[in-house]
Length: 463
Ligand SMILES: Cc1cc2nc3c(=O)[nH]c(=O)nc-3n(C[C@H](O)[C@H](O)[C@H](O)COP(=O)(O)OP(=O)(O)OC[C@H]3O[C@@H](n4cnc5c(N)ncnc54)[C@H](O)[C@@H]3O)c2cc1C
Image (cartoon, rainbow, N blue to C red; front, side):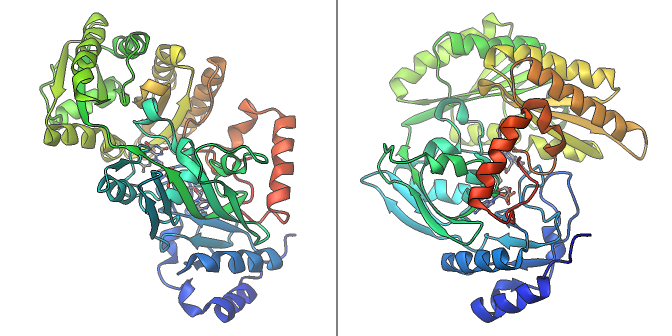
């Protein structure tokens, strides 16, 4: 039998060393879920540091008393990564929200982990600088969570995911050891690349206390096209055609028939879209205004050659913003229409995207489930949603489980991966062996032991 966790002792020592104000005593049930379907797991204890320096002593205490903990940023994750399924502590980093330094000369920003992504973007934009990673949750999610999940987003298509912007991290290991990793120079190859080992580690190796991120100059201009297609195959063909034409869109986002019908019926799209549309493509082009004109024409041609029913330009800022807010809200729009939604996040090599879209639809049909796919088509990353109503159809949860397993098998057969950006967390843990052989998982367990000898950091997740 597992001995009970020393939560009482831990709380007393935390209060003695760090003060009573760091212990969250009300509303701890709010920490029982993230934005996904896992849980509820009410934590045994919630601690919310008021300064970065409190993280190391806190982890030392957890290490000493063997109490497991889960770091939490803004809790917008979709796979249960920040949940205390172990009954231990949740380390709430949302209070650490300072932008510590914006170095305009070197185009760098240093932030605490709880800084909200959109706030960071606005702060650097005010200095003419640009932080491209833009998860659709950017108004709510935190940089610490983005680093721990290696978050993507629409603009990953051109600029890459969060990890492409992380240069240096201040972290605390599972034994409470503070470590400064990486460098503030754009290049640097001393030692192993531990920064990028921690990027995407889902809080299983260390807790991020501060991060230095590289920035770019703001693009001079940006335009969005919304193209409507008769079906998903035509939209996917347009994605490949844009890439083959040498275009480098900032974003190429696709919505399938289900999403298109929902958006059309809600009348939310900011530009006219033909009633017969069965798929949509958002294409964002940014850069130098002179070159953009030609790129816009070529992108529109690629869409029309692939069979587009209409291609509309959103040139002005309010229309662009409305189009993108519809895209960003798509997950919630679907959630409002179906009682339950299981969202997967598979990714395949770009050329296999049409097959992935077709496989998702076939799997939905085979299991008698509504399916809605949308997402980051430009980098082969599709959010496949199985939509169901367990009250009206009690056997549907079982069919969803079968559909998820079939989707993963199909994705791997296409040379893809179970998660493009949301991570493993609790949700994908049972499926990892589909993608990773035992020797690879053993190697990762050895890495975890080096960083977290007692296995207290998000135990059982990620690997
Ligand atoms: C509507 C919606 C749209 C989304 N769109 C996208 C998208 O486009 N792209 C995308 O990639 N994701 C997307 N997500 C998923 C989610 O927003 C991202 O995974 C995000 O990076 C999570 O950040 P967070 O601050 O909410 O982290 P949390 O959910 O709090 O935690 C996520 C993981 O990070 C770990 N963690 C958090 N902070 C730290 C830290 N300081 N040190 C160590 N570990 C830490 C946690 O333990 C957990 O494993 C979306 C979610 C929603 C709800």
